[in-house]
Image (cartoon, rainbow, N blue to C red; front, side):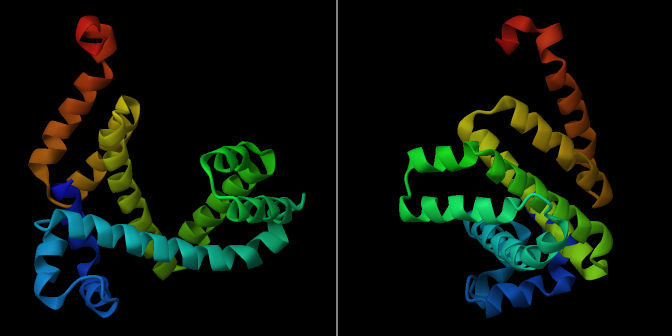
Length: 196
């Protein structure tokens, strides 16, 4: 995780990440170096979660216009009704019900298509910040995998992390994570008793 935080710092510190941390009031000016380097782990994770959410909220605002031209079956309106029902009765039960509706699943697929269109057709700035969202998503997947004990999500997140390690001069992690990923994906075939 600290290596991933260092990669995020290398990628985005020149894009105003320091200024964004300070001006948003999330990180104090004296703590900024420790946060961006990954030394203040909890604060760094908190900041990246908040910034990722802010960027996704901005994307959601643009999604309304985009969906008007791409939504043939009126998926957006029916899914928004479901979300209103959920906001009136926030509970695990209603959350599960909302997620199980086909219109909500269709909306999630459309939102993912919109994010993909931002990566390819949104211009250089949109593609750059979508890259930030992608890297933070790897971080969140690693966190979730370790907290929930989800082995397949852990391996998937490690697999997604390896190219970033190669790209941003983390040679030891690039080399050893490649071996680790190869061994762990073949664990079930080669060492069944350990896998169990």
